[in-house]
Image (cartoon, rainbow, N blue to C red; front, side):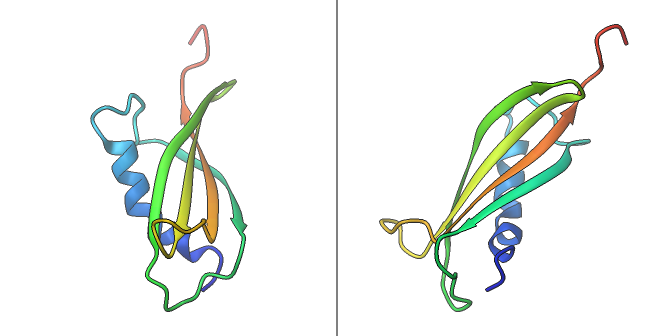
Amino acid sequence: MPSCAPQVLAAPLHLRLLAHQSYPLPVLGMVHIRNVIDETQPVPASAALLLRAAVAGERHMPRGIEVDIVTEARTDADARPLWTSTMTALVRTASPGE
């Protein structure tokens, strides 16, 4: 499986996390900045993947707030992740004085 495929499969999970009523930042207008993918071993195309994602951090930056979502792909709930990614997005905020 291509190394970016689990990221695509996890998109609905990311959206559910960010759109949850308890999440304080708006999803609309959020800008994807980067992905960092760590594939510890090849993900078999035929594997049924268990995906787990969590918001792992927020940082105040000059243009807004950067949000990290860490996602893991496993073939078994007890197994080590085959694949991990950190997706970073920016929630734009007004600069001081605007």
